[in-house]
Image 1 (cartoon, rainbow, N blue to C red):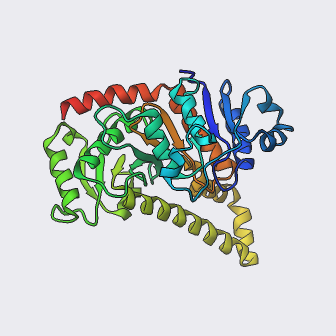
Image 2: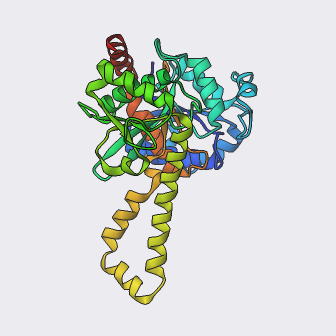
Image 3: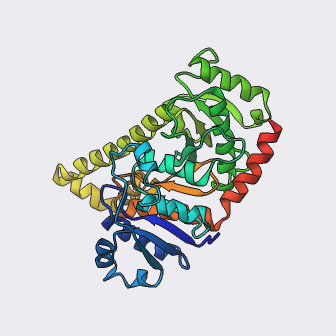
Length: 339
């Protein structure tokens, strides 16, 4: 496997392919030595690369005229896996030509194609979308964020295993603290599935990581390293957090632009306020990893701009070069055999 080569679906996403190429240019500066296999329409891609000298020697365009539409059903997209930019980029990982694939395209299609093309890890019932989210004191990994709308208690346990391994190997947490997202912290709260998963966790080898239930407003406290939930709840949680960050940024902008005194206040504390704006910028945490597959798959937001997409490529690069998937498979097998 070529760990320093990343496969890119250049046609997926609302702003493709312009934001994709611009994002690659940003990530390439931060990750020297990485090369990119870019799948898409060369007639649209070549003009975008024309004035980007930094990319000319590290980007190889693989001409593909077809791509997956945003509203396309996963079942339909699967039949076109061998003729679309997304499907061929996934194939590059399956064939060992690339260490990871990044796409801002249709989530359902990416999930279906990745499972079909890369296969699930042994012992994992379903893959899960995981993403890193900021907290008061650091970062937390949350999963599932939309790959599985309905989940069994066993699915939640599998997600927990993958979350623990991700937190250890990607976030560097030696003894990560894991919580199940719930409507209350009391033992009698929540659905039957969540209660069953909690009881099973407490009885298993995973109990040393498990700290109980967490409510939505406590996720940002920094008292947890992993939050596990079904994909329905997780997707709402993620989108609400991103919306709240944008709301806070908009409020700050209104305050500083609303009066002469506000503008003076901004001028005085400019560096601090700009630092706060960077922390609130959801683009810096763009990129969800599809865990549980024999390959690294990173899903970027469909509406990602160049800055957002660059962070998704950064994440794919870090996981590929850092050999994280092999580490995840190894520790996953160890944990699964012990619980």
